[in-house]
Image 1 (cartoon, one colour):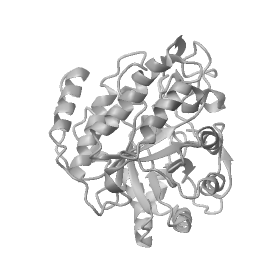
Image 2 (cartoon, one colour):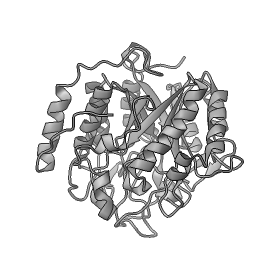
Image 3 (cartoon, helix red, strand yellow):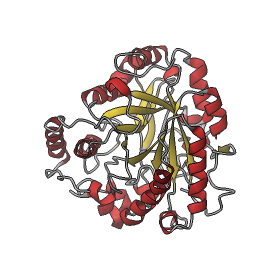
Image 4 (tube, one colour):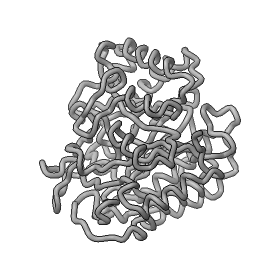
Length: 411
């Protein structure tokens, strides 16, 4: 189910569901990642005048933020039980679009699925959160597989897309944020810009014909700072390419929201220095969203390589744990995330947090002192991101997301 392709021994930053694995002014970047971050930040500071149109699809009212919790049915249920104070305004689940046979399409939607990372059951989770919005990660990654993007674009999977549209129609009036081929520029997905854009358009066009007022399409970047893991294909995944986002963009008429993955804001979790910082990529996405006047969903976020329960910290590329206090963990990762959101709330309007004990799930297990790729650490070091695993983290979390001035509160 949820897995990543291992590329040159390094792992990409976000979830990839797999059975194996318009124009805008570009930023002129500097010669090193520090200069690039400064340039991007300067552009960001001068671009905030752009306002989101009032007709923006599923835009939270009163300039508030919408919170999703994911990512499998088991951990969502555990969050609900441990933190009843949060009435769960949104949930995140995953499925795939990888077959022309509508009878077996969309695993986890009609029948539960388990990709060695917790059970995913749309019916089970949605029955326990009847009013929650739903963010769906729809994957058609093609590494070591047929080119699903091309098949979708050609119409070969239209029957399966129609089945998806039927399901989304049945969910109304529940709000649905559909992340079509999420993390399009993550090298581990093996998408190419041309076929990816055509596939996105094909899915979005099917939904547009239905006039589904409850469904918004999401175009999600991985904001991954090391395109070199893609080898000879590195150029198409690099934010050093001034036209990077333009090259992948399906078009304003097909995209309702822009998504971004935020597993790190700086390099505390990195065992080496990548070509540019995560912030550099994230700032370009902010600029792009402001230019396009599209809201941003932080579609996947978790303190990768930290352990909230054990209170340790390591690197995503090597599991060498060192003690850390709950206060420092909050200051290292959580507070910078919330600061980032609030500083850019003109476009950032939703957050999807992954509240999972990754290490207990076979797909994400990484043995002590291990590095990917090997059998003891196949997909990198992920840790434990459950906020309820530490009283201090839970308290600080609730102080943030329970603020009715900033966050939507479920009844």
